[in-house]
Image (tube, rainbow, N blue to C red):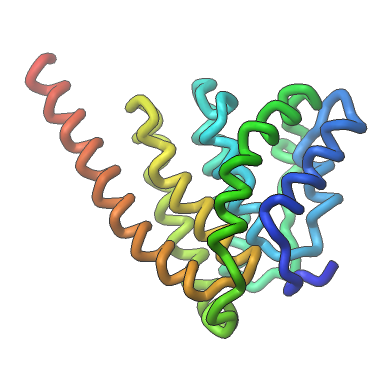
Length: 205
């Protein structure tokens, strides 16, 4: 499939579920083999969505997923044709059963996203727009490690990343603009939560 082809979130999750059904362990390298020559959107969207499942509750996982997203965004910014990951990341894996459960938990959200993304203002997803998205995604990823210490806080920038990745995947310019506005809001909320928590720690420390 061309890297400029339209895909729905449901289609992306369906292929991920197929990988889970055919392997006891699914590593990131398997996903790269399946999606590697397509849009960078799924590689930004999928890890962000996974962070919002029970998998994201494992200590260190949000930061690792943010690293995967950041590497993807950096390559998008550099103008690469497809995603590349170092071996130590490609070898990271999850059991097929765990992945199947995670995909199942994401399907309802995926249906909602597909219903509200229609490929509008497609021209806004071309040219310099993907590079702007890459910069925003990189900044959001930088906020994940400190926010991981706060319950559910890292899901705020990850949700913003998921919507940005979705906009690139379905090539919806209207959604891209809306997601950038949401990113400003999410960044403000995340910053407020971190500052508030830090201030509370100092008072009680």
